[in-house]
Picture 1 (cartoon, rainbow, N blue to C red):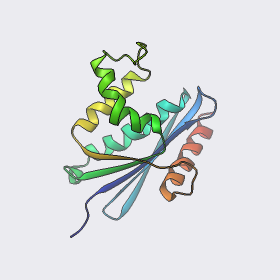
Picture 2 (tube, rainbow, N blue to C red):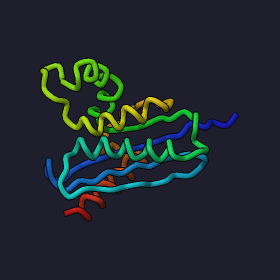
Picture 3 (cartoon, rainbow, N blue to C red):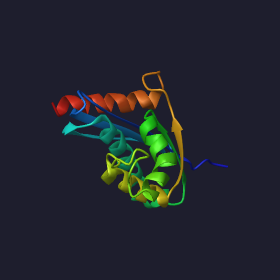
Picture 4 (cartoon, one colour):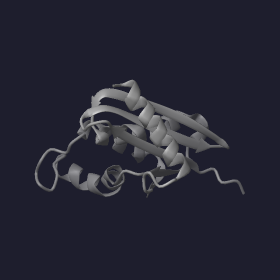
Length: 151
């Protein structure tokens, strides 16, 4: 039986925080690896990490042949992985406030990501960055190119 799982790798980063930033993602499905990337002139590392995940999941959601398939996301950001799998439920209960009663940073992006994952079958997996994981390294290279282009 063929495994129809879609594999996603994402990465985001900045030169300075805030500063010029970039993100990269690789979506692997049906024997093909599709690379996407982008960036901004003035942003933060966490915003770029979130944007990478949002962009990948949006692309998957908008692809008819991917409907209903399992998705495995491999991400080197504990912030995004823990945020979407754990912290977000409390944030929503607390009116988008942290445990310290402060407004959740990047709420706009968290809300986008939350809406996207609601309709998808996703497992989130943390991978160590800069550790030779092939597609994580590809994402990092895409990210670095975008940072350079947005300087």
